[in-house]
Amino acid sequence: KRRFDVLAGNHKDRLGPDALTSAHFMLESLFASQIANDLASAKTQHREVEFAFRFPPSSAVSEQQRIIVGTMDLVYEDIQGGWHILDYKTTNIAPETPDEELLLPYELQLGIYAYALEQWCGTSPCEVSLILLRPSMRCATFRWSAEMRERMHRRVVRILDSFQQHTLKTP
Image (cartoon, rainbow, N blue to C red; front, side, top):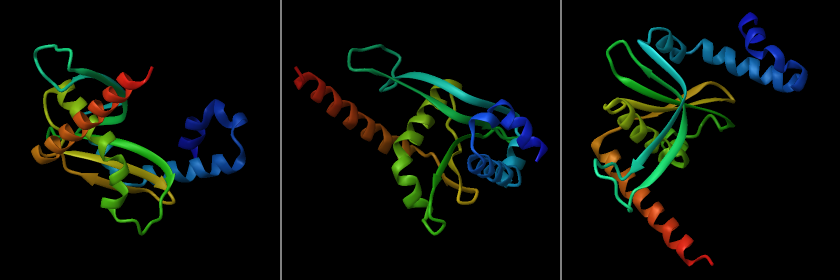
């Protein structure tokens, strides 16, 4: 309760009792989770990591490259030196939803985060995870691999090409 009061701080007057109760429950669930233990033992933690990188990645700048920007919720390095990306979601997800189905709508976002981490620290993340805070705390993870990187690369290229074709046709 004390941790929540400190975190809620000056926002209590702007939030209703239902929102405060919900936030308290989500934070307490997070603090009691394995994720909290992993973060407590992490070598480093970086919150709200803003990034911008050229895509496709290349040492030479070209007109075909685009800049991708975003913000990762949390990046941390574990005690073995592995990097992890966490993205928090407060969406109410049915508990029986399989991880694969849950990750699917966020795969592109998380893949871009993995690319950003590779650009930022020169190494691939070992895990990229969604931390779902409702209706109960849950972690859905995918492992970043060469296959996943290639799939994301093709997907981002298709999206950027489609966007560029659409904007060229718009008067």
